[in-house]
Structures are given as C-alpha cells and as structure tokens.
Length: 448
Ligand code: G6P
Ligand code: MN
Image (cartoon, rainbow, N blue to C red; front, side, top):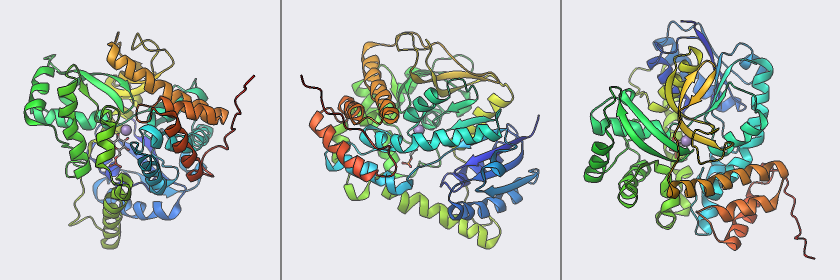
C-alpha cells in the first residue's frame, strides 16, 4: 500500500488530537508517510502540535515526518489528502450565532436556522480561498471537508468548483448515530450497512442491515422505543447536551415512526422545546469553551510538559476513524460505502438534481458513486425542499450580496417562519458579523 501524505487544515482545532489518535488506530487502513498541520493561527496550532509530536513519536514510529506550518506552499505541496476543519470567527462567533436567534425566541444552533446561515456566510469566502490555495499546490490531492455548516458550504463549493471530482464534503453525525445503533444491536459499527437519505443535518435512516443482509431496522426501532437512545461514542457519551439530544430520537420515532431520524431534526420538529431548554448565557459554544476546549488544551500542555503521554487518557472517537476510512476508500479505490454529501443527480429521484444531498455512496478513485434512493415520501420531501430552498437562498445571498435573499431564506426556515422576526434577526446578525459577511445590498422594493 502506498504511504500517503496527509495535511490537516485547522491544526489548532480541539478535534485534532482525537484525529491523531484515530490516525494511529487506523494506520493499517491508511498508512502515512507524513503528517502536516496547517493553520492561520500559529500560536493555537503550535500548542496542539507540540502534543501531537509526542503522541506520534510514541505511537507512530513508522511515520516519516511531522510538522506544523502556517505557510501554504509548505503545507500543500506534497499532499495526497487534505482534511479540512476550519471555523471562521472561532467559538466566539459561534456563541453569537447561538445567542442572537435565542434572544428573538428562535432556535440558536451553529448549523441550523439563523445561526447556520450566519456561520455559512462567514465560511463560504474562506473555504473558496482555501480550496483554491490547496489546488494551486496540490492539483490532485483528495480534499475531505467537514467544515460546518456543511450543507451551505457544500452548496457553495459545488457552484464554485463544479468540475472538481476530488473534493468531498462529509459529516460524522450519521456515523456517531450508528455507533449507538451498533451498541444497541450488539454489533460493531463497521458491520452495519445503512440506507439513508436527506440533506446534511437533515436526514433519515430508512433501514439498517448487517453485512450478511439481515434487516435489523425493526429490532432497532423497537429497542429505541423501549429503552431510549444514548450517545455511545467516546467523544460525546458523557456530555449532558449530547445525552439530551440523543434522547430526543425516541420522541421523534414515536411521533414519526417511519424512519430513524438524524438527531439534528430535533431543531426543526420541536423548535419551541429547543428554545425553552436553552439559556442565552450558556449556549453550546460556551459549554464547548468551558468544556472540550479547556480539556484539550490542558491535555496538550500536560503531554508537552511531560514529553510523554504517560498517565494521560487519550481516546479514539468515531469522527476521525470515519474520515480516515472514507479517505482510504478514495485513495485506494476500496469501493466501500459511506454516507457522504454529494450532488443528487437523480439519487433521490423526486428531489432536484442540483441539490447537495446526504446519501450512501460507493467511494472510488473516480469519486463517490451515490446509491439510488428512489422516491421519498411527501412528509420528508416537503421538509427537505423547504430546507434545501433555505440553503440555496443563503448561498445566493452570499454571491449576490443580497439582503432580500437572506430575508427570504430566514422566512422559509422552519425555525423562524415569521417575516418580521426574520428581518429582526437578520439585522442583528448583520451587525454581529461585520467584517465577516459580504456588504449586503438593500434593495428598495419596486412599487409602481
Ligand atoms: C456533530 C456534527 C458536527 C458538529 C458537532 C458539534 O459531530 O456532525 O457537524 O460540528 O456535532 O459538536 P459540539 O460538541 O461542538 O456541539
Ligand atoms: Mn456534522
């Protein structure tokens, strides 16, 4: 197997150490020649990189080299595969995305509703620049992007890079959910074969099979409605917020028993509940700043100071393993099936071709080959089309610098609906995102 050169963009992310542990765990599937971290924030990255160096030295002696850089050429020139995880505006702006809608009584979430729109409008420009930079130095590298809000970012990249076959957007949520399925079914996640359709953070598992072809869907639904549903992946299993989110799956399944819902549907199906549960001063971003961020930075400092991982608890989570197996399937033409975000082109036959959908696809060296889903039912189709229109209008709004398109987007969104409320939220978001969003043109209505 050819050893690959991997670049992690966003080396300073709180997820990077977990990713390093996954690279070690999965080295049989994706043997590496070198690992490079790239970030625009040198200080933040170097703290994580110092720890990564120790971990890799101890647990990945076969690795040829590791380095962290803020220089694009140095980062990308020999890349075979690039993992992209950037957050324009950082967790501080995530907190604004969550707080501002909440103040108007609307769901405050980093990828759903107004918060998702705000984050999308911040991310699109940086993502386009980044992909251009990577392509300049590494025209053939595989780019696996899991930058959020993935649905909006993927739609913008589809428009900007229509012919780029080696650019793939993915999300780990379906895999994180499948870890819980596997636990309930007493199986390994890699033994499960899902049928799934939707948009990113807006989809449904229609069936779960095992590799032998046994259908496990009914057994699973029954288990969830009888025993409830919990996160099992190490990254989220003990997190109260994720425990609450996973519990909602039981409720969704009771209300809408046809399919097994993605956890993110809670924000669209129970927006009032979600608003009532939240407190403006302790939204998810604040919890992550006080929780995961502190924990990861503490852990990194400890490893660097001791020059050893001894006594430090380092866990492998599904997020990294999933990305690595996805990359391996593309690089080695393994033709394994994973749930990814890809252009519909008929996969869901009653959804428009140019939608970026989330479906299982066979991952080959010629790119993802989505599996046919066929026709989807009216309820899910109706929900999806509203959300899809929202996502497309947000991207239109970015390209056209159009206040009007963004107002339409928010009014269409299930978490908002009311036009005056949409306008009030939009105006607050514009103010908070000054310097991040394009300067919007305010059209005066043509009344004649
Ligand atoms: C899941 C989603 C990601 C999202 C993350 C947020 O993994 O698939 O898209 O970024 O959750 O988790 P957090 O713990 O930061 O709220
Ligand atoms: Mn996701």
